Amino acid sequence: MTQTETKTESEEWTPKIIAFLCNWCSYAGADLAGVSRIQYPPNIRIVRVPCSGRVSPFFIIKSLMDGWDGVVISGCHPGDCHYISGNLVARRRFGIIRDVLEFFGIEPGRVNFMWASAAEGERFAVLIRKATKIIKELGPIKKF
Image (cartoon, rainbow, N blue to C red; front, side):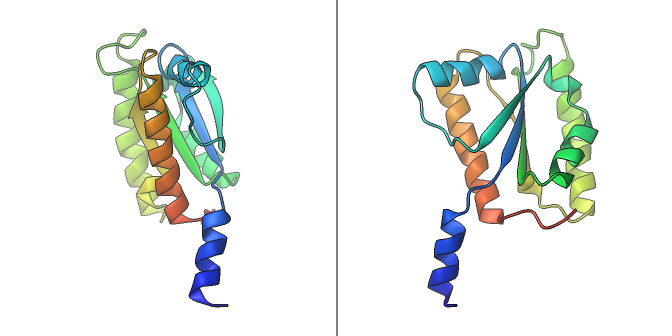
């Protein structure tokens, strides 16, 4: 195989990404992107959660163990959480889980944390495209 053939195969590969979205902001932002016909990669599967602060680190690790190539957690902007400080709890957890995953040899780009409000359908699509690009460059998950 030549390097050109290998590159072509990796370009055809699309990562499987699971996204845990806050019900009040990010899920509504994804819905707005869909209703507005804003294009974003179709290879994400959305799980609606009450708040990004309710996403357990176990969900992230289990998703990677089950073969998902990447994980996205998205919640309300800081200060806009419907549960007052749930998104701040999520941000603290994300910092810790990122370090733990890196210790286990999982690349930092596999798990992405972002903010998107209900009125930011375009921003949601841009962030999903960016996360997909990062995960695609990393290739299929081989750990776990």
